[in-house]
Image 1 (cartoon, rainbow, N blue to C red):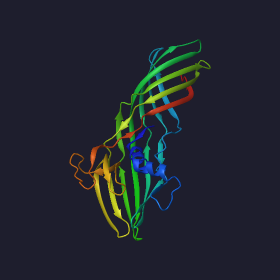
Image 2 (tube, rainbow, N blue to C red):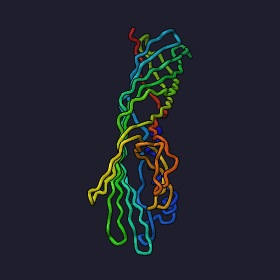
Image 3 (cartoon, rainbow, N blue to C red):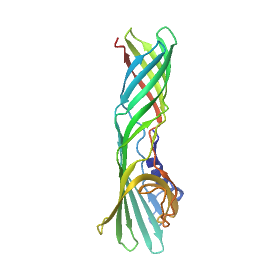
Image 4 (tube, one colour):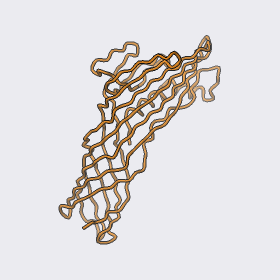
Amino acid sequence: MAVGDINTALRSLSNNKIFRDLRRDNPNNDPDRSHVEGKLKGLHNTYTNWEAELRVDFTSRLAFGISTFSPIHRRNESSLTYTYVGYVGPQVMTWTFRPEFSVSYPLIINFHYSRPFMKKLRYSIGAGAGFYSARASQEMEFLIVAPQGGSERQLFQWDTERRFSFAFQGLVALSLDYSISSRLSLVTELQARFIRLSDFKGTWRYSLVDIGYSEEKSGTLCYFTMWDYFIGIRIANSEVWPDPSNVEDPFREIQNLRKAVLDLSGMSLRVGFRLRLF
């Protein structure tokens, strides 16, 4: 799966040009020079699951099917530490991310067109659409330790409500069907799905942990680019905004704002059996 803007934002921070240059120029993390330790991990985009389909053959070549596959859940945790060595000493900044998303059992409608290829072998192509249910969340903890020794811990959290969406997923399937008996076939299928879900509603929370200050807002989960003054470069981020059409934040110089996307597009190879009921 592509996964989408969650992974895009993580890569933007972890692999920005300043950090890439520091990893190249100071690979041994010399403490007397600025350096970067660790990398942020995107949500793992490969998985194994099962799929079941109830199929009705209208003719020897055309069939209609209703299918579902097992739920998908991904969560991880990773940290990155940037030590900036200035005139007054080192300033140490650590980002810790805990992203997560889940997709429940979808309801997928498929159409198949098949033709015989050899005596016991058929090939087919198909297309379809599906009804999907998904949600996402992320927690980011930012710890900064100043050269003088003082520290500040900030916590940024957002989570979305479950999003129900009917997606014309552009399913393209190429299937080979080998007849074992009159009722049982071995099926190998290559699928390409194109599914992008957006317009997630959710809540964003910000906390200054050490002093107990917090604030909260609700709205639409958005993706954008911003200026990060701690690093000195523009990076991508995701946050919930009450009104995405009217966002003002001159301190971070927000640009390219749009609704965040959970991208379930991808490729899969499936092997299984087709059992003729009657």
